[in-house]
View 1 (tube, rainbow, N blue to C red):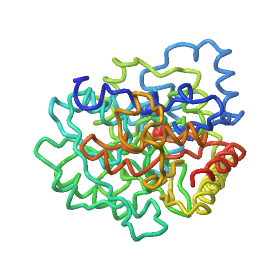
View 2 (view 1 turned 135 degrees about the horizontal axis):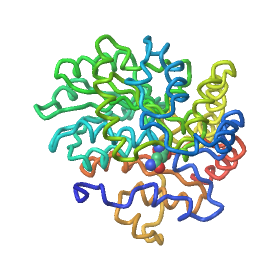
View 3 (view 1 turned 30 degrees about the vertical axis):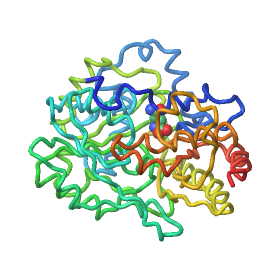
Length: 409
Ligand code: GLN
């Protein structure tokens, strides 16, 4: 299984890792923050480390304080009283949670539909578990749209319907979307939900960027649409919510029929998630509302987004304005670089965007992620037109990056 597709090729995060780039290169590649989590969140971890119990195994379902905090935070948004024993599962990051869902539900040869581009981890997570990824396009903005937004990346529901076969088990929805930043509309989610219902499919809804939605857009949870709770697992992440991507604390919320088999899988894969950081995540969710933490964070990210948007506008470069997440896709089709540049082997074996991103990192001093990584090999050429820049960095750093990016033209 490891040999199937691209699963064993070097992943983009390792190639464009800060460690492979010059020390003074500004990292807008892999999406992690260069500022600390809030002190009122990390203090809970410090306290936990000084206490005996949270230095040890938690229940495989997750520590009860975090499950209670998830219940209180998400229950009202999902319009239901969540059962902390059977409908919430804490996982070692959102990735591990999703992997465990695949382990629990995929039989050899089962098909999993994902919209392409897709977060790269889905592909190996599906194939390692014997599944077969099936791709449905998110169509890039039409060329005559001069200022596209992520909403101009569109789905054609007829294509989704045509992708369903008797082997289809699941559809992955990712909103806000990585790497496009698309916030799926209610209408789009209703159409996807109708297909899931008609063909009796599970839905994995990866909503790890749910707290980062801009321009007055609304984050819609597909689990909330009529009839969808019973077939949907919603994925969340403490890393994105609390600027702590290295904690590897995530969670799954869904009906017992999905959470219980997934609990069996996760128990045998990692047994449980690290305990002290679950306490920190719990503290974050407990206090977020009274501190207006997510509202403030959204405004901060909108300001960060503006710094990159302004420089791309000044340069007359085309990009997709993201309505959610912390990524911007820049059209790099016109960025020129010498063919005989000393590219490393890892980059030479891949698309033009890998070379362009490498060149931009080396010569402009700002790293980004080549977007063909988010496409299957057959469709990689579509992604070659884009580089993904992350704006989960402080304003100073983004300002310096913007200055450097002025040399792009
Ligand atoms: N989710 C992060 C991103 O897209 C990185 C994930 C990873 O490194 N595997 O940048």
